[in-house]
Image (cartoon, rainbow, N blue to C red; front, top):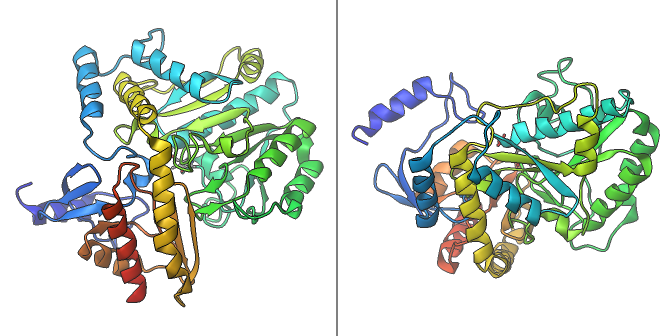
Length: 427
Ligand SMILES: *Cc1c(COP(=O)(O)O)cnc(C)c1O
C-alpha cells in the first residue's frame, strides 16, 4: 500500500463498513497482511487477533494448506454454474457434512452466506407445510436475544429489539418470540426455563412452521450460553406439536463451543441445520443448509415439485475446495485439546475481572470468552486503546468478547486477556 492516507480517505468517503454511517464514519485501520493469529497493519504494526474475523478464521490467517487447496482448485476452475453441472469439491464437501452432522441430516443445500442459509431453512420449512397441505403453519418461533442474519426473513427471527424490527415494522413477517433462556450452561437445570416456550407452542402450534434458534450459544444477539436440557426440551416439544426445528449453527459449527456442533452438548438433532462462517476456515463466503430425507422428500413432493432456490454462485468450487481442506485440517488437529486449553486459560484469566465495579458478568464456553460490562462500551474510545495495546478486538453493546483462532498460543491469548484487563482497569 503506497499512500495510506489516500486509502483511508477513499474508504471513509465511499465505502460502507458493517453497521456504519456514511455521514459519520467510524475509524478503520488499513491491513496489509495477516498470518497465523497476527494482523499486520499498513503502518507496520502487528496486532494479535482475538476475533478470528467473526468466528471464521479458526486455523489463523494465511494457512499454507488452505492456500494450497485454493491454488490447486483455481488451476482447474474457479467457478461453474451448479444448474445442471456438478464437481468434486461440492461432492467432497457434501460427503463430509453428511458424515459429520447427525445421521438424520443427509440432504445439503449450498448457498453463499449465513443469512441466505437461514432464508433457505425458512423456505424449506414453509414449503414443507405447504406440501403437507397445512399452509396455515407459516410462522416461526424464535428466542429473544437471538441473531440469524440481516436479510428480511432472517431479520424477522432476530431479537425484536436489537434486530431492527422497529425500523422495518409492517414489512417483516410477524413471528413469535420466547424469552431468552436464563439457565446457565453448567447450572443445575431449572425446568421453569422452558415454560414460556412450552406455553407459546401449546397456544400457537397450529400456525407454527418451525422453531428457529442458535443452540447453546446466542452469538451476536448477546453472547449468552444456555443449558443443553433446553434443547432436549425443544426437540420434545417440536415432536409433540408437529413443528420443525431449525438449528442455526452458523456461529457455533466446527468446534467453537467445545463440540464439533453445539447440538452435540444435548445429544439431539434438528430437522434443519444451518452452517456457515468457520466452514471455509475464514477464506471465502459459503454456507449450507442441511435437512432430513423426510423433510426434503416431503417438500419436493408439493405443488412446486422442487425446492425453489438457486443462487448464482451455489457450491462455488473454490469455496467448496477450501472448505474441504479446512474441515480435514480441523479433524486432523487436536482441536478438542486446543479448545479445552483455551477455555481453561480464558476462565483463569478473565475471572478476576468479574470483581471490577464496571463489570456485570464474565462467562466462558469453549473458545469463547465474554466480559459483559454494566454500561454500553464506547467503541470509538475503546477500540484505539485496544489497538495501542497490540490486540484486535471488536466490542459491541455491553460486551468485550473474544473468540480466537484455535491455534492461538498461551502467550498470545494471555496478551489478549491482559489488554482487556487494562482497558477495563482504565475505564
Ligand atoms: C453470522 C451469523 C449469521 C449470518 O451469517 P452471514 O454470513 O453474516 O450472512 C446467521 N446466524 C448466526 C448464528 C450468525 O452468527
